[in-house]
Amino acid sequence: MDQNIETEAFRNLERLKSLRVEHRDLDDVISRLATDPLVDQLELKRLKKRKLLIKDTISRLESQLIPDLNA
Image (cartoon, rainbow, N blue to C red; front, side):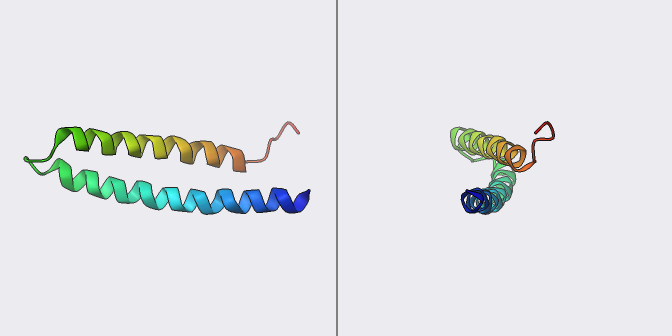
């Protein structure tokens, strides 16, 4: 049982790292595109929504990794 919990926690940590990298990369892309007057505004909006979704997922994973103090 403990092995499964540790494996899941490790997978969550790896996913968290990956999501943080993707979030940072999206931030860079959005920043560059926002300065381009010819950028497709719909594409920019989609990237921003994706970035927000990733941020929400990161927050959810981080809260799962914090031990429940009431336990």
